[in-house]
Amino acid sequence: MRYIDAFNHFFPQALWDKMISTPGAAADIGARMRGIPCIYDLNERKRVVDMFRQDKNYSQVISLGMPPLEALGTPAEVETFAKLGNDGMAELCEKHPDYFCGWLASLPMNSTNYAKELERAIANGANGIQIHSNINGKPLDEEEFRPLFEIAEKHNKPVFLHPSRGAFDLPDYKTEKKSKYEIWWTFGWPYETSVAMARLVFGGVMDQFPNLKVLAHHLGAMVPYFEGRVGPGWDQLGNRTTDEDYKTLLKNMKRRPLDYFKDFYADSAVFGSEAATKCGLSFYGADRVLFASDCPFDPEKGPGYIRETIKILEGLELSQEDREKICYKNAQSLLGVK
Image (cartoon, rainbow, N blue to C red; front, side):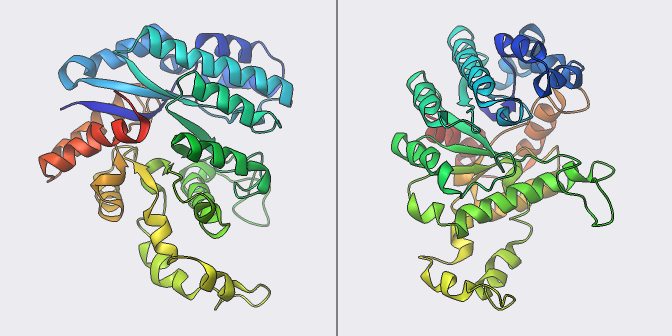
């Protein structure tokens, strides 16, 4: 069985060096992530991939790690970060194709030039695009971000949706100033992804770009588990609201809300949970789920989530056809990976 790991993270050397030498938010990434060498040290990353490369025919589609580039500086600074990141990803895939079979473009979303960089990255071989669940606090259905989805649809490049939220962004209680105990990550990130998906649906992005392909990280976040709310619950959109006319919005939508959410793609990166994997597969089906590990953020700082996710997939009762789709064929089709 071949395994194409469709969503995991790495910083090319030139970008890493530039970030940790730039004063401000960019430098903080170095202090936080130096403890995970697998995310910036190529030799360590190759060592981890080698644990699976021969036995499992394993390779990775790489994308940048957190935080979003647009949170790291001025538009001009972020344009530089994006160019270094995209050029570095392309070079890694060219020089080490047995390890890295594809890459996702990252964009300076706080710059008016983000569409120009996206076109450049696609021309340079990007297999898809990574964006985050909000752009410095702005929802994805804002008009200023529509060119991204237009370009993605035009070039048939999937958009991979990654959650983004910090401890101080949205406190869990009105009486507090921050989210404690890393609740902002454990429960906040799946919520962020689910909200972003909903804004793409109800904000009209999915109707405006009917051929757009969007993958929601971590097996579609909250959506599969809350199928009842997304389905029969949102079939009653407007019954709970008096200050806006959501009933007319619902009538004008081309399909049921649930049908739009079924159109998303998802990945298997659920931190080694068999129950979550089964739930997500039940909702999306084998045609829309891609194998992914979220390497290298496991407690072992590299191999843990790869090993555990493969173990879960190998243990599921799947037809050979469905297993191949999830493990590598969907990635080949969606991302154009050879």
